[in-house]
Image (cartoon, rainbow, N blue to C red; front, side, top):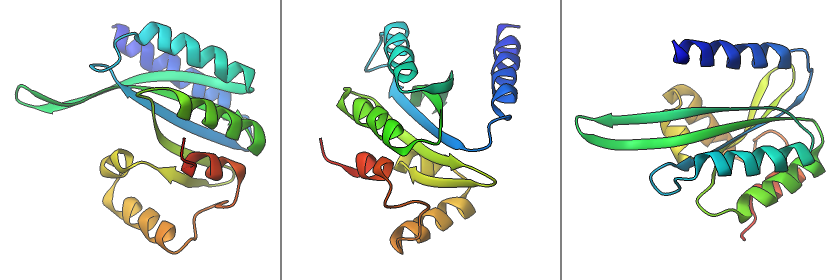
Length: 158
């Protein structure tokens, strides 16, 4: 029952978001087994993202495995921002300073969805057709908005 309620609440938040014409979606994740303070981490990121003008924030769990072996046990946080490259880039820099937090994807959502960055883990979970297209575009320098401050922040070394 709680699971259904959580899905409905997330759907309502996304439904509210659909009124926004353009923006960026950033998905972050961390391994629950390595970083056990889920509530505290969530609060830190929620507070920090609101400083940078986050319009919507929601979370999910991703758990997968085979038999008794857990392959993935991650907590995923999704942040939706208005289209403001500099402010989103500052948030990405904050994220990169945090230990054990990984950027799963950065997506620009305007009239269509453009993946600006996808981690290896994210690519493995994507449908093969879309993953191949992303890899091809990345190899050839055709990714959406490649010269933006956000992309420079994502690829910057700490």
